[in-house]
Length: 482
Figure 1 (tube, rainbow, N blue to C red):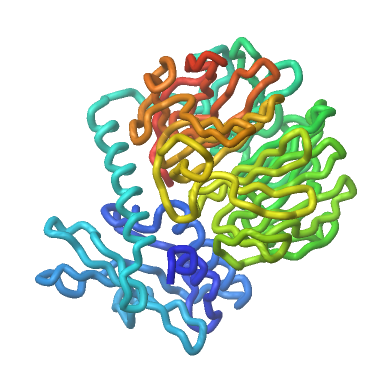
Figure 2: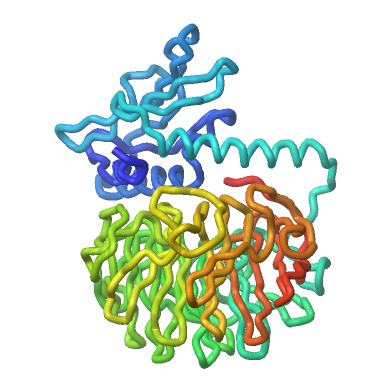
């Protein structure tokens, strides 16, 4: 069983066997699930509870079974506090058990699923733990006063709280998804930040309306069409929203809080975890559904179909339409001829989809992480996230694993535009002298300037065509993961 099958087992929850009121992990072990894995677990549990119409009154806790041999198993525990059995995500007759072996310092070192060593979980924990440790070291080294994370203003006066999506309009203005403030912000070419729609001071939700009367729950991806309309995915509420240039917000597809993979029109359609999106010249919207491992298409009339991939079937396979497989599609972009490019986050590759729905691997090699530049077939990536295409057909991508911004030319040559692989930080500079903390989304204007939403850094960065990186808006305020 590979890592994606391991994640997929979380969708196989039995109503009669597994459901939880909450997830509770000790601080030192919280990183073991990685954010994505943890998110999947929580969503799957809530889905099982919804189907069953009740809470089963269980939570998960880590229990050490043998300190001498340093073996730890994740068990299911009733609220009485007495463990009853190992964690078992049941899909009869299979019963899955996760075991964790500790190192000499008591930290998780190896993960076993059903008695077999699982490289994906082991590697994911190691990487996330290192990332988390960097945060802790950074926080411990700097004594700083907590600052507000929602302020309109110019340049470093402005404050964001997890900006995770960015697009640029014809006039050079940016629209930014401010995820944890649950609003959309506007940033002028000079770095002046204002709130466009949503209200950070009010409760979250899916409420259509104009300006600050609209509400978002967990806005994530963003795209813009030729008329200046914005399209936004809501990760938590599983819907696609539209925002006109006048700030009127409507829900185009999906039903708030209803998860699934059903094709249909408007509120009849379902998404499992809509991520990024892009709009073509005729108004069709293409959406990555990370948890469903599919690329969805929504027409201007709101009709949603599955464009590529097969719902719930993870993997890495080139092919046409439903025969193709994705592991965790994240960012998406389109060139001037209608080809789609997808950052397949889970397989560390960039996929290409023709208008005829033929999927190929454009760059990288499935399952092989790295930071190697060169021809597409030799290049390596680590957790590619955001994508953007310029007028010349160059593809720009952000990497969460390498903390870099990469560029792929139309003839398939990969270079590192800014940052140094494995070096995190918030440093302006040129090329590999710059540092990013969590480059999540990317956009490029008609002059070739590249804009990066550095999510955990709470900043919007700008990269000139000469590779000079500056902070356009916000102030570095590294935030811990959930």
